[in-house]
Length: 173
Image (cartoon, rainbow, N blue to C red; front, side, top):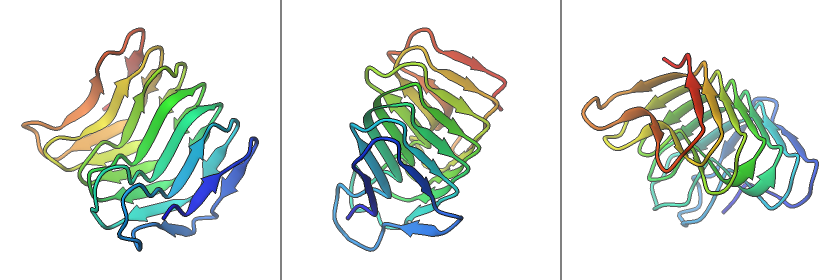
């Protein structure tokens, strides 16, 4: 199941570098941290790990219908067909200074009607044949100073912009 399910506004989760291992339950639809419909959440200093591939919807951090979220200074290793970080219909959020190993899917995925999110100074390793370090399916976001490594040069991509307009992308490696 889900390790942390945020159910209030103005929540700060400081893991103090402790491990959130949500791979122990062999069930789909589980998350390391989930925020659905609550604003002003900060998630930082966490180590998040999922070692089992039981299907989709097993994101390390899944945030939907929220605003003003901060995801800062986390270390994530995610196996399986799930994104490390998925923001769906989220606005005015910051994803910064994270180290992400996405073994089979995307490192950071922003989709839906959310806008004005910033993805800054993350190190993302993407190792499957169909992953993107960062995938954006939303408008008006800023992506800069990220270091992205893909290990399958034929079909993996550093940054994918799909159905996305007015995004600013610069100084990524």
